[in-house]
Length: 446
Ligand SMILES: Cc1cc2nc3c(=O)[nH]c(=O)nc-3n(C[C@H](O)[C@H](O)[C@H](O)COP(=O)(O)OP(=O)(O)OC[C@H]3O[C@@H](n4cnc5c(N)ncnc54)[C@H](O)[C@@H]3O)c2cc1C
Image (cartoon, rainbow, N blue to C red; front, top):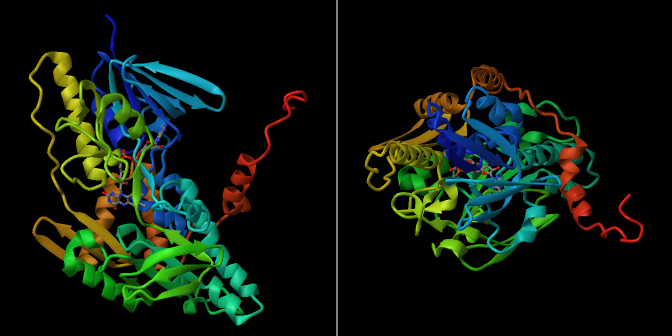
């Protein structure tokens, strides 16, 4: 009997949880295609960037997670084409092209960073979407203190000791809090010429409040805590330009000013995977302003009940771009597939159950919004710790994460301060590689 062929795009929360939800079915064969060999736990990327965790702890190998799931295989590759009429997915890994035919397709390719039309900002202000981003930022943050130690003028030293984080959502708040803690606790005694505790950490946002999705009360609480830690919070402030040496901003009253700062982090704005454009063109589904594809109430595309889109690249009912939306969407889609295969009636529309949200500000301090309960402080931080530990995949990763947290939160150290030249200069190196002239056809490429 031929098995039902399922192609899955993405090894993030949507792709992985969908695949695992079908682990007991021997009437399906699943091909999970992803451009990275790992499943990335994005909520802890900022801890990799600031030296608390290693990348391995938050990015276990997808192949290892699925090793015992006989009905699933993993294919490395960047998906470049989806043909919904022919029901095939085309992916490329190095020079190898793979075509995967399917009966059912689940697309969970997530979202990328949006620079709101200013893509050239990316070179100077990495976002926080991948392990590459986190390691590059780690190199830049720790490297900035090293260069400041060697600075020959006060202005130079100040610019290297100024860190600007753009975007006061959870990622921006967590990054700003961690850079401040790094400067004031971890690096306090490590330098001789500079005083790391004098580092300026500036959190910018065009919105009037911090953590807008958590409501005014928790937002104000988070802002007070950040300010107590020495973070300068500048709200109603838009970035109008950004380059190697600083950021130009426009405040709410229209005044423009420049902040000399060598290290910038972009934590504002997302844009749906470019695969959404392909799917929209082929199915007539709409794209929203952030490039996410509008899905039907059952998470499929118009006229294509065999194509599900879940997670960050889909939009439905204004559900937020959070892990639980991707996980619940993935489990719903898996249930629909099971029902179809066994001839049971399909489920009604997908509806997201909000289990609450949390963000850390510093060690021992977080904010949590769970149903009608809104609270902050130590209890929220403990809860944050427990929830994140549960979602880290694999026992050994949980144990090492706990050890690293003990090092950083009980002590003042950071176990993962290493940054290699490759990581720091990788972006420039890759750009150089991209801009190399094509090899002369007569001489070949050798
Ligand atoms: C820094 C940060 C912090 C966050 N913090 C939280 C938090 O605290 N709580 C919370 O609930 N949510 C948080 N989120 C959001 C959460 O991580 C996302 O909502 C969730 O990861 C979405 O899951 P997804 O499966 O849709 O996409 P992702 O998890 O992003 O997975 C997308 C997958 O698709 C792959 N892919 C993309 N394009 C292609 C292609 N062309 N070919 C092949 N593979 C491709 C990627 O490699 C990846 O494996 C955070 C996100 C970030 C970036």
